[in-house]
Length: 435
Image (cartoon, rainbow, N blue to C red; front, top):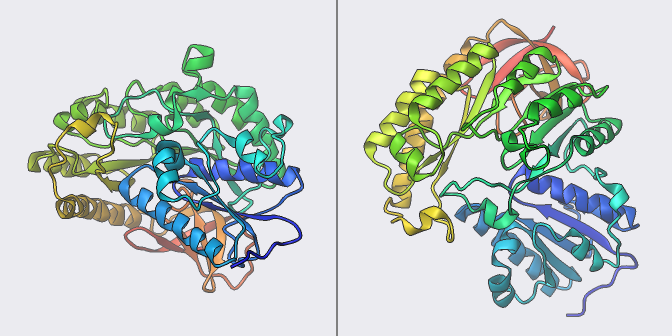
């Protein structure tokens, strides 16, 4: 069937995977728009003629979702509803040659750092003066801000260095300029992201410079909340907590993926930290910033994980009572350090262990939420859905954490801060009324 050619190209970008991919898609959008090309994120109307799929290649489920999405777009192209399908992102970076042979219908494949090359497909020029300019795919009151690219760690389960390369920090000036630009667009909350946040600055300043960056960012007028994601626990720079404590607009929130707690697993994962050090670190962080919200992610079913390792992890959660926890089942990734190990735990057992661990956390989360009953919190209104408003406290990040449900007859502007008194508490969400 002959494809219907629109008068002017209209590009739809589909983003899969993490917030770092989201930022890459937003940067691509900004560049296309600056070149006079019509661009949309996740366009449901199907009135576009070109699609860019920004893929994730982190674990098996993400790879499967990426392949399925590419095949859906190829089907639309074959039905004459699209002219071109381009693929970028981590999956493309890692498996480009194999994918090119298996899915030849894709018009071009691009790696994670090939934006100028991709723009050439649109007869567009990469505009270096646009650094920091993005077309936000998020609601306009919050945005992700990537402070570095890549990772120098050698965690045995992780394929990210294969897809994103070594750690490269942006300068403090670049990050601050981007933050100011985002605030001028209406952004009130910025989530700082990186493959490894605490490594920031070591490559360009020869020292860890996250605390210095935070001071400069917290001085940006109009920036109400700054949130920290993906801090590595080994050699954690405690000076960032001093800045968090003294600056009101830095949320008392820290996302620190621990992955496991047993020495057996930490050593096999090459996490460069031991059990007791993690217990001590959590205690030290809480002592420095009382009331801080600690979020972490864990892995269930890593090769060689024993029942004792699982019990240690459950005991750790009961001992330290983390505020937020997410869990992944181990995915056996080629060319990683753990690929040589025997992936000896069946998928069903991995899922069962993850469920068992999360049941412990669910109870902790419920108890912690019960403690909030009757208390008043400042929240940011994210959206209106099914006649009610959904908001977040400073202790909750977008999509991964708790929401505060507000029933209000009074209209609440999206992106506004309001005071809410908590009236009901569930496992993972809260309900409240306006004060």
